[in-house]
Length: 254
Image 1 (cartoon, rainbow, N blue to C red):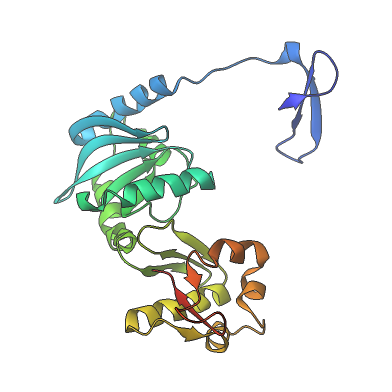
Image 2: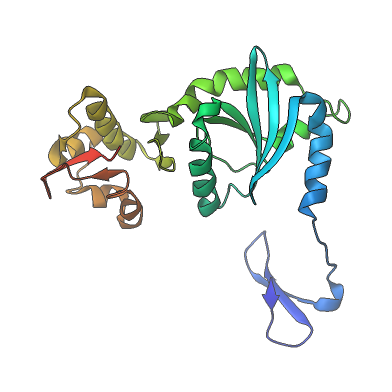
């Protein structure tokens, strides 16, 4: 929301059709959300579920809550915010990867937009856990433990080079020490999958023509396959030329 260019009026984009709407300032109510209060309310619901509470602010958008008992596993538990913002997602992912020694933990996302995993941690939406009619402080721990066990193997991908597929058209590349790379589209996934396979075989360099064939793409170069903007974020970050080569081959930069 911003000034409409005339005194006493504001303009915002209508969420339904995206068209600008002008409204008098006098008609606006002001609300302020205190993050400390919000966190206190969340913790009040979560406290009975934590095996050990030990609050530590790791980042403006990441709080360590303590340990939670999920079935036979007692694991670290975190609260994360603003994961819909790529810059926040990247920052928190790197921080959590640096704490891999704690093992596979649980991240409670404050919103419903989040990746498959965050670092080497299972992730789920906190609003879904708290949206219960059973009463305050009650969370279905059996359901949460089941979700954790089901996703734990995927989260371990944050510790090693791994391409984790959600379905035929969605996957995430994990390389330790780097933010996860989300991929959409079967051809992109096949291209990266060929590089992961080569990396795990011990012979990481793959000819560009071979990669394009594996992807089933008629594009002459990876830049065309991925698109200029996406490739610019991948090239020399996740994928690059093998040592001593400047063209013709690619390998994972792991």
